[in-house]
Image (cartoon, rainbow, N blue to C red; front, side):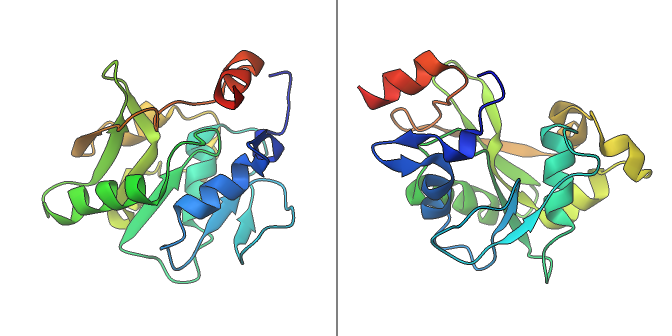
Length: 174
């Protein structure tokens, strides 16, 4: 999308960031990885160091920013505007229902895991992170999560749809 700030893009007059915040309304502490902007609720801000390290580096930077590490971490990419509170609840329930799993990931209609629409156990993510923080930069999310036991939660409707192109954004607003 030519370097566009996805968090600032709007669907039906609401920014993608605010849609993500609405989906996590039941979460006590929210950490946003990105540039600070005004938001409708209190959040903690962080960035991966160096910036541009990719989704896994951002996820790990977010883990480090919690005031008190939670048992469960909701991970939600800002470019999935149809994820809602019900999605987050289903993912959370899937993890809470089985103490043997490390997380639950949303799965789209094509069977693709949406690893950035998920709930993970904080301890599992912490254990999976590279020993050397310098290795966070450029780390593929698949590699970070490779050893985790994950349960798949089927998407309902188009909640797994993401905005990766201007055309996909137009499709959501028509």
